Length: 326
Image (cartoon, rainbow, N blue to C red; front, side, top):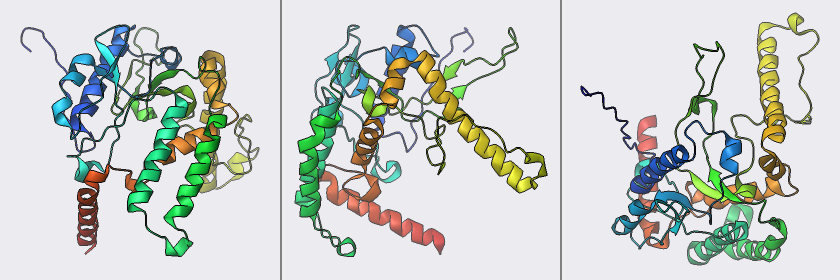
């Protein structure tokens, strides 16, 4: 502006769903992080910030003004110490382009067990109403329901008993290199982290459900190799052809990223490290991740009242895809 005023505007795009809540929560997260010391905020500091329940973070005023924007009234938020902020219903992003009009939210959960239980109970309710046999796998909906009910019986044994350690903290689902701003400092002539961008769809989750290595940094798929072993290049790398040499270098970099992520997490963020290396940590994260892929194939669960509309839009997707091929 001519008077020196500067403003950053956030324009929602198709993947930003549900629009009101996704943008409201993203703005709140940025304001909240600035309020506790500014950005960028190291993950070790974020881990120490405890929230009263699982959900998404909102300005209290925004959540109060949102009750008319969803098909059902939103749950009242749980206020933080700073009353401007509260934990509200968790966002559930869907097939953004075709289901953007459905403002889908989840409830607020008190702890890890409540979060996992809700997802299983949600799937059981869906199967009882819409479940169909799968002839190819010779599976009836009742078979899956039985497995889910067994899971509910053992779930309390999977979750952490130390609630103080399994604290609810901010979960950033899209942590990747392109979202970390690291310019070269003109003062120190070294690279410095100055910002973390793309905070859409953040949520507050128990540490045991979110602790892990980002898919952009982890190297668990390296078959036959211990991921925590130090990496090294082949002794006769220069003797390899260009293609093989390039592949070895890429594999070497993947192993280094995984190794040093764990090494420095253990050094600077012991709470996160303890959650990552816990007995059932990987199993719990897989259970939670796949709980969002139930209902309509990989598109995710939707409320029963939206089922027919979503199926119609899925049909449109197939029609558009076939038309594009032709």
